View (spheres, rainbow, N blue to C red):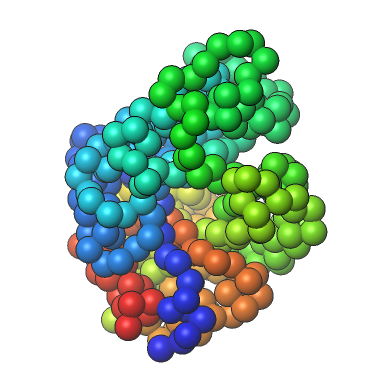
Length: 332
């Protein structure tokens, strides 16, 4: 198999997607079980996400869920992809990750994003507004200061101060430049818009300033990868998420994942059909051989050191099988 793929780290971001007719608690337990499987398969990290007020996502408290994942695993790195820093006070985030690192030393990652709540109601409940994302660079500097013991307030973050929890910036738009200027690793997606991704990677590398957290640029590319015995089966894995995204963009609500078979029988408007078909395109999906060829191209173009896989689907057995087949490419 490809030496380039074998030399690249592969990790998993699971968003605890809920499924039609099943409770949110099951989605959270599925996330923990998937982390255990990812560890057995040789994945490098397992991250969880933050969403508020979304029917289709159970993961609303990423540091809490990360603690459950870390407690159920032994060796895989565990973290967040990410904690949305504008939603929280940096001191509280530092304290949470300080506790995680103290409980699971050497295994915790701190992935950080700059999004705020997706709806006005959620933003009001969080006490935030859209403009809070503009302060991300300052919030990030304050957060790192709590670990370094340099807060200008004279207060101290316990037990975070003095600990080294690797920070990562989820780069959306200006996020690449913010990550570069802070000297932090960057996570960038998605694989469908390769030109935009490459522009972001170039901006990051050209603006990068070495720091104690990262002496040189570190790029993680993120996106959906589906691997199956046939191209048709791999495409089937993409169907539930593609429909949910199309529904969200036409109805304003991101729903639980439906079975692929039900989506096939649904009547869609022209707009819904167009968004749905768009949602199926551009992902890395197919047989192991097909995906390996596409992965090689992505890695050659981006020079990424790591791939963060974010695949979601209704059929959990097929999802685990996809991760197993993908692992066969980098552990062969």
